[in-house]
Amino acid sequence: MGKPLSEDWRLTDQEDYLKRRTLLHTHYIQPSPNWDHDHCVFCWGKIDEKTHSSYVVEDDARFWICEECYEDFKEMFEWTVK
Ligand SMILES: [Zn+2]
Image 1 (spheres, rainbow, N blue to C red):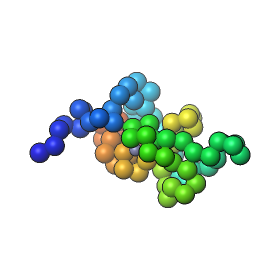
Image 2 (spheres, rainbow, N blue to C red):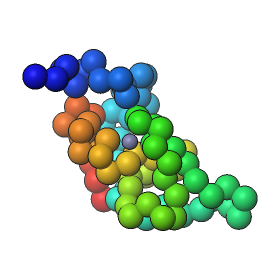
Image 3 (cartoon, rainbow, N blue to C red):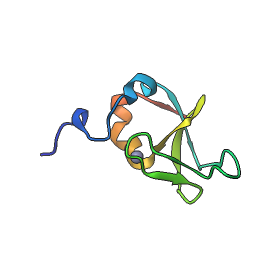
Image 4 (cartoon, protein in one colour):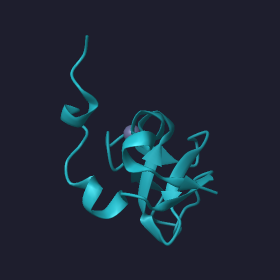
């Protein structure tokens, strides 16, 4: 048995700003020509235009979540996905 998810190394203070948010399931879009990637807010994996798909907070595009972390944390964070 692994550790409970609540003790996962990827969790820091995301509940403060990501709990019950609405996410868009989307392909990464560069915010500007010289800003070509972001990092998953949980695992810090790189998210860029080569990433197949990922999730971003609907009204705050600073926060990106990779597919794997989405699957692991979707129940804990009670997200709505569009
Ligand atoms: Zn991740």
